[in-house]
Length: 207
Length: 184
Image 1 (cartoon, chains in turn brown, blue):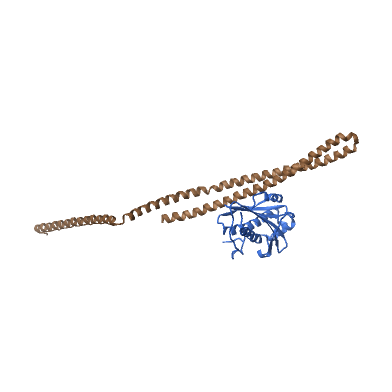
Image 2 (tube, chains in turn blue, brown):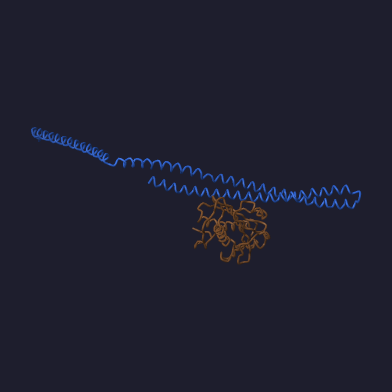
């Protein structure tokens, strides 16, 4: 059995102990607050003591880094978009093939024309021979046959000139197309190189 | 304008390409010499490729005919029975020959000019080449290549310049594997 007086004394002791602990806690809090205030004051003093340009420089370089990263990301987007140029080159390629097919068809038509002209020359030659055989009555016909032969010779010369022009056209078309194609590859190669360099810059800025 | 040493460098680079591509048993077993003109050759077609840079463009033209001797040569080079070499296979072999020749030139040029690139090959008629000089040509050179199997090929180099071109170039030590494919 616990005596009532003993219990009262024990309660009183515990109360005093609690008060002492609360007091200690208040003191500790006060000290930590004063330490924090002291540290802040020290920070302000340090900032004031530091070279004023250095802090500005630091802030500026942080801003520049952020801007560089934004620009690098924007550049990356532009490069990726430009790499789509390859579709334009493919379009040129398709157009070039159309042109080559068209040129080939013109070659075939001209060959056919040249073949007709050759036949015309033979016919007009035969007509001249027949006109000569007919003697005086064939004189008028001989004039017509000669005229036809002259026209056939002009047509033959025209066909030959046209054939040359078509070959020149083939050469110009091919050199132009190949220049476009090689130039396109050169541009895509340069863009891919730029993209790699830009990715390295981006990695450096974010690491 | 193309300086003399640049013209000579273009010629030597193409010579490397010709030796690598024309199907001699080794590049050394293909003799290449400069010829004045190609007026008397009988070849009917040309495989043409372009190497382009910002400052110039180079056309390479390899002359050929679709005859038994040429088909036999490319069948031998590609380890194919000549009877099995149909038109498609023959023209593919000719284009590949052009790719290797021009690829070597492109690779050597890239050592001097970092921004160069090459086109794919096109086959055109021999008569087209008669008009080459009507283009703005800065350097034109013709070559005859003779392999150790006695097959001759003719090649034309045509350089069109859009700025002054002058550079120094020498054959690198490691160019012996010119045109060979690398497997990884």
